[in-house]
Image 1 (cartoon, rainbow, N blue to C red):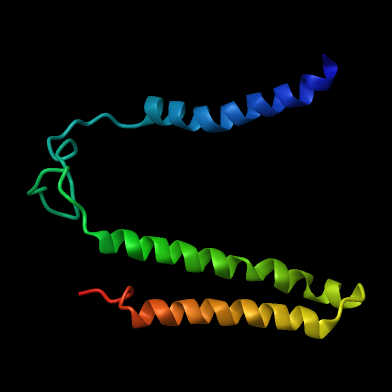
Image 2: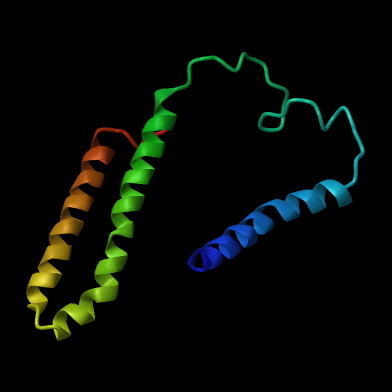
Length: 123
């Protein structure tokens, strides 16, 4: 049972960090109801259509492309951090460098294809 004590302490601290700020904000925060606070807000003006309208696919396409290229760029960080270690561990420096160049070439090629197809154009 004593081996679970650190886990219990961790859960209590995590719960306190998550719940205590909300409780303090609710207790100490001002309560001044105002019709403006409870009115619907959409980009600075009143909403003029139903919330269930069809959304333009371009928003999703741009978001997916952003996530895709952002994740691919994030894969460069582990390579950059371990490049010196790969060389000192006896790995061929040209092999490590060539692999990342191939990765970047595929990334740039994908970006060029998306740009050529007009996926990044916003009308």
